[in-house]
Structure formats: structure tokens, C-alpha cells
Image (cartoon, rainbow, N blue to C red):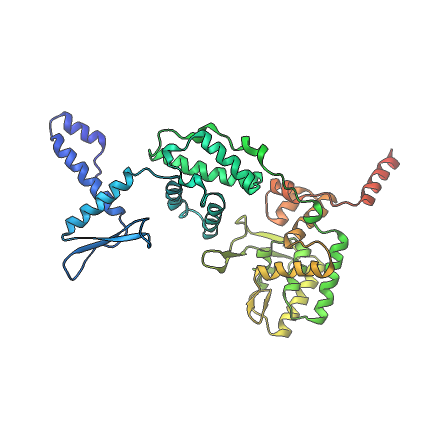
Length: 410
């Protein structure tokens, strides 16, 4: 059935084809049908002949209550009146935020929705701002809220961007849906609040491993291979050191990913382990950038492959996954705990698997390998490589040798 447009209605009214009263009745009927479609709860008739359904009620302990009427039309009238009342009700920031979430949550992963929940508790829960009526939120109130949140939560620029985004998206939706006549966020830019934010830059010692620390870690791993060869997380840590792979990519490797008989041997990185914080389940998905990449295999990685393959066969762990034990595939948190325990045993600052990634990249960048090549190997963009993964890992001796070489050439 073709939808009647406003132009169609104006035409039939202007030409006397149909009466205004009929049009008004038609519009009311359509609005009623739309409201009833929005009511997701079941409408049912009981044995007593009465019609029942449930509606939301914040004052009720369960958050909803039952209504009943003697006829189906009666219960539908009650539903329509309820929703009309909701539309006329002055909404708070909290009400509008969760209206935005109703759509947003359908467009993001479960983990992102979970992060929205934790962020809401951090930024808004039990704060005066969440109780503010939309119509009473002003430029000044937002300014005071942002400044207070930054100071109270010691927000960095990155954390504040998230807070700013939540408020901006919520008020934009309120403006689009005519709950407010003006959006006070138009007077702001995120960056104007940066001067109040904290700067938390980790020293290089907490982001990368020194050569001495890496050698200590590898030495300890090899010692433990002899003592407890069946402890598989140790092997995952060594491959992280050799390749700079993400921990989720490491535990998702299969034997079939390795192509060692090629003229130029390589292995494919095409998947990664993820964890759904809502369902508390692990699952295999694509890599972080959704792309497959190939990693070159040298003799060291080839030897490592044969070593772990032999260990898996000897212990009866062999299956499709490269890293598995008697309970099945190894999960990422076990590997992360393993490297931190190794750091603790060696008395060096605790860093995770990600530090191997930054270390490998920084060493090769300092040796002249281009950021384009390193970005391809590690699976991220050139900009990300330059901004987050490249550090000066050269020693003072390295710098002295460089200066001496320049002086000699001169």
C-alpha cells in the first residue's frame, strides 16, 4: 500500500476531495497504530475475560507494572495514553542517554556496549548531571560538569574525549527529536578542555624491554623448558618475543597457518581471540585491523616451530591449534599472566606481551627498517606505528658510535 504523503493530503483537502475532519481522524488512527507497534510487551486476555499487559514504571520495585481493562480496545487506549504521557514527560539526561543507547548498542560489539556501561558508571552514575532535565541543561552547566569530571576522575585527553562524545551524542539526539529547541554543545570544542586534563606519559622503561631484559626472559624460558616442558604458555611468550604479534593473534594460530616448504617460508596471521565481556565467553574473530597478513619465517622461527610441535606430540596435546594443553586451546589472559610472572621472578619491571611488540618495532626502526615495512609486518597503519610503537631504544654506546662515525667521515 502506498504511503500517503503530506503533499497528497494537502492536494485532496485544497480540492475539496475529502474533509479535514476525516484527515484528522486518519492521522490520529495512524498515530495510534504506531504507538501500539512500539509496545513490545505481550497483550493477553485472562480466564476472567480481562485484557492485560505491562508498562514501565520507575516507582515500582520491578521497574514495571501490570495494567488491565475489560476490553481489548480499553487496554489499547490505556497503552496509547501511557506512551503519550511519556512523550510529554520532561526527560532527564539519563533518559535521553539510554534512548541513544537503544540504537547505538545495535551497531557495536558486545564488548563496546559493555564499555559503554562501565563508562556510564564512571562518568554519570549518581551524579547530579544525570538527573538534569534536558530543557534545563545549559552551556554553563555542561562546562562545570566537564571541569569537575576531569578533576574528580583525573581524566587524560583520551578519557575526556569519551566523556565529551557521550554528552555530545546524547544532546544531539535530544535536539534531533525535538526534546530541546537548542543544543548547548554547539558552543564547545573538545580541545578547549584539554588544558585541564592530566598528561600521563609512560616512561620508555615501562613500554619496551631492554636487550638485557629480553635475554634474561629468554634464558628463564629455556631453563623452564627443561624443568616443565609441558607448560605451553612459556612457548607463546617466546614467539611473542620473536614476532611482536598481539597476544590474541598468538593463541589463535593453527599449524595450517605455517608454510615452511615454500621457497620463501612464511606463516599467515588471519585471526585473533576475542573475549565477550557480556557473555564471558572466548571466541575467534578476525585480526584487529580485519586484515590478513604474512610473517616471514627465518631459521630461528623454523626451529621454534619444530620445537613446539615436538612438545605437543610428546605430551599428547596435538590438535589444530598451535598452542594447546590438556584442557584445549590456551587463552590470552594465561599468556599475559605468564610474562608478568616471569618479570616478577627476574626482578624487572612488569610489562606485558604488548611490550615485545613495541620493542621489536623500535629496534628495527632504529636500525633503519622503514615504517612502511614494519607496519605491514605488525598489522597496523603507518601513523599508528609512528605514534605508538616507535621509541628510541639505542644505548649511549650506540649514540657514541654514531657520533664517532660522523666525526671520522668529516
